[in-house]
Image (cartoon, rainbow, N blue to C red; front, side, top):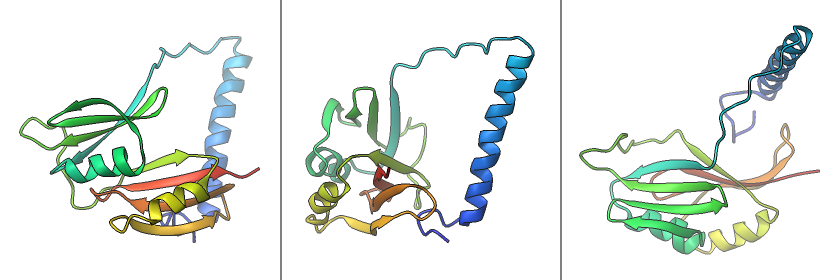
Length: 164
């Protein structure tokens, strides 16, 4: 069993992936056979993942200082960090009007794709405040090289690169 995805065995992950591919393919073939064009999706301009914290000092240091992400918006209750030209991580201070509340255990993983897993690993491991959840490894069932850390709010952050 792969520790990065403990809920699924390699065989189960393979079956789930095969089922997803078959579902997409059968939907496409049905639409094509019926002579219908698939309906276009409405456009998507950007993507934001919002993470909730009791205090923003530590996550701001993690995402801003340690990872070096550019902050595009700062307020007393919010910081937005650019990952790519169209994807962002928002760190939000839990408050009276928060949509979500801080959880003791977070079931969210931020996955960051890079061509330099080793470079990121070396940068992050120097910070004694960061918990490394899994050292660099090559995944046996998915063609990636990765490592996982825990951010100050308990969220898992994965750095990975696709293997050819």
